[in-house]
Amino acid sequence: MGGQHLMTRALSNDLRERVVVAIAAGESCRTVAARFGIAVSSAVKWSQRYRASGAVAPGKMGGHRKRVLEPHRAFIVERINQTPHLSLHRLKDELDARGIKV
Image 1: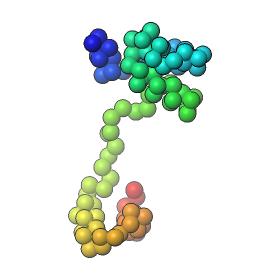
Image 2: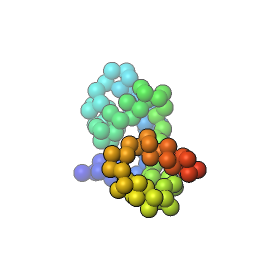
Image 3: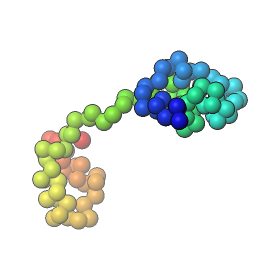
Image 4: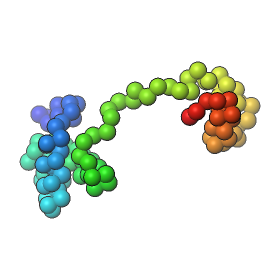
């Protein structure tokens, strides 16, 4: 039960590196997770991220991206209603023509 709290807070890159190194050295994700007191899913995810990108640091947390299309919602809904088979690429082209960069 004690490991549950670890998932909600950011963990140090030092811990991530030790986990990734142990897995790269041939230990199983399950064994490494138990030793470091983290979730097996975290060990798997960190190992995969390291193999894919060479980095152990997490990406940006949260979705704080500005909602670029929100002011154009009415236009988008109208176009989809007018043309139910409208493709995403075509809609993107139409928005682009209006000066809206997506």
